[in-house]
Image 1 (spheres, rainbow, N blue to C red):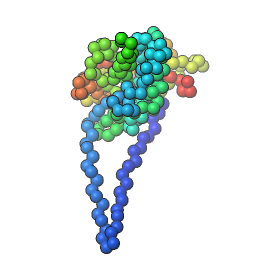
Image 2 (cartoon, helix red, strand yellow; image 1 turned 180 degrees about the vertical axis):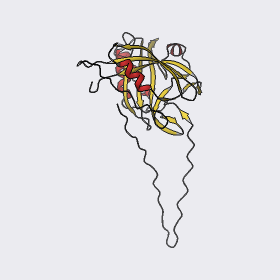
Image 3 (spheres, rainbow, N blue to C red; image 1 turned 30 degrees about the horizontal axis):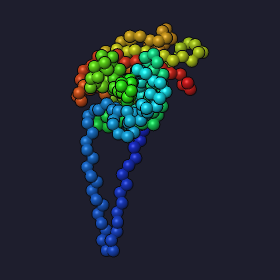
Image 4 (tube, rainbow, N blue to C red; image 1 turned 45 degrees about the vertical axis):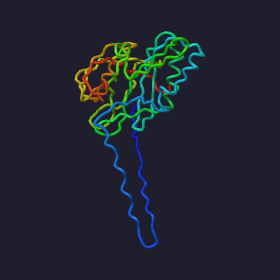
Length: 250
């Protein structure tokens, strides 16, 4: 999938004329400087994912303990361009459908690189439980099992498309078959606190021998990342990240 160009258009200046004087246009308020880099964030506003998921409806439909992983392409506007859910625990179908449904109409806080909003891939995990008859929803900004288990403040590194990065999205491979297949590849990534990819290894590919692993290595060759964040600060990281390949039109 090739990424389009996202444009932000703004700033309309007006001037008012008095009878014999021309008023000078007011100086625009200074815009707060954006950070050097920042990952795409879930946010907590009314349009955030955590506030859009209908937990009461999940209970009504019979959803029990559940967990899914999901990823989405987040535009510089914070809109979700594309999303996918995968590796759900058994019995998590209702949660997965609800998460993917809501991702189509929510807002992220966009990623920043070199002080500018960029297109980035967000990796998340959603867990759901019913505790004393009440829903307990948690959404984590990573897919590392130990980090999720401990509910740590950790955000997975996020590949971005923009200056300095050769990442242009993921591209469905030629599988050599006429059957439309969905593939999931797991990559082991070693990324420093500046977002540089130090090492990449193929861990698994499902289904095997159809080119999904090779495609993932190619897609991430030359990619640069928004680094992992722990407790609000960029850190070196070694993570395993699933890459989801879905045939176009399915």
